[in-house]
Image (tube, rainbow, N blue to C red):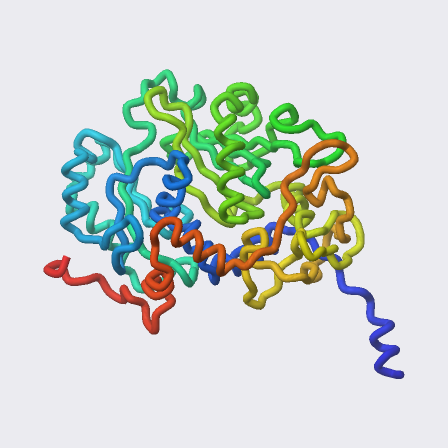
Length: 422
C-alpha cells in the first residue's frame, strides 16, 4: 500500500514535444543502424535508383567505391579518376565538383572552376589526393553502419550559364522538405555558393488541415536568420516564378521518392534555372539538420497519431493500416514510414502536448472537410523493403552488408593503399 501511494502521488511525466533536438536524435538512431539509409544517403547508390525510376539526377562523370565494386559502380583506382578528369577536360575547360559518396555537411567537397584551377595550380594528381583523404581515412564521420565509402565527379550545374540567369534571376539550388510524399518547405539558395550567398525560405501549407489554403496558393516567405535580407529577396523572387521552376516535377518526384522509400521525412535537393540544362536532382538525404519550423515537426508527429496541445495517449492501430507511432531505441523493422517505429508514444519531453489523432485530415486520409491529406502510413517489414531496393539497383545484399565501412570485424579501409597499388 505504501508503494502504491507513492506511485499514485507521483506527478505525471511531462508531455512530449517534437523539438528540433529530439527529431534529430530519433532520426539519427535510424540513420545509423538500418540498410535503407545506407542506400538513400549514398550518392552513388541513390543515383542508380533515381535513374531506374526514370528521374533526372545530375550526371556523374566518374564514380567508384573504395572497398570494391557495388552495383553500377566499379572499385576506385587512381588511374580511373585521372582518366575521367582528362577525358572531360575538368578544371581546364569545365568547372566541376568532387564529392564523397557518403558524407554530409559539405565534408570533403571540392569545387573548382577554371579560374580556381589555374590560380591553385591544380592537377589531376592533386584532385586524386583530395579524394583519397576521405576515401581512406580511418574514422566514420556519422557512425552510419552501412556506410560505403565512395567518390564522384560532376560538372557544376552553373557552368556555361549566361549572367542573365544568375541569382536571383532564376538559377537556383532548392532544398525541399518532403513529408509523407508532399513538399512542405523550400529553401532556395544562390549557386555557386560562397560566404554570404543569398537564400530564402518558403513555407508551404500543411496538407490536410481544414480551412487552410492548399498547395502553392498558401505559400509564404518566412524569416531565415542565416540568409541575408531573406524576406526581401523572397518577395522579389516571387512565388509564381518559383512555382513555375519547380512544378509539376517537384510534386511528382517527391511523391515517387517518398513512396519507394516509405519515407515520412525526406530532403530532396534540386538544381533549376539553367537555360541549357534540365531540372536536375542534386541528392536526396535524411534527416537534414536544418531547424525547420515547429509546425512541420508537429506535422511529423501527427503522422504517428499525435496532435499538438492535447494529452498523450496511444495511437490507434488497425490490422490493415497503422499510422505508426513514435520510435523506441530498440531495433525493429525500420520501414514503418521509413524510420523504424514501434507502437509506443514518444518519450516524455517538456513542451507541446500530444494525443492520439482521430481526425482523418490530420491522420492523412482526407476527411469530412473534403481536403485530401498526406497518404496514411503503412507499417511494413523494413528488411524486406531494403532487400527489394538493393536488388532493384542490382546490388548484391550480401556485398552491401559486408563491404561497408563499419560492418566488418575491422574497417576495411584502415589506411590508404600504397601508391604503387593504385
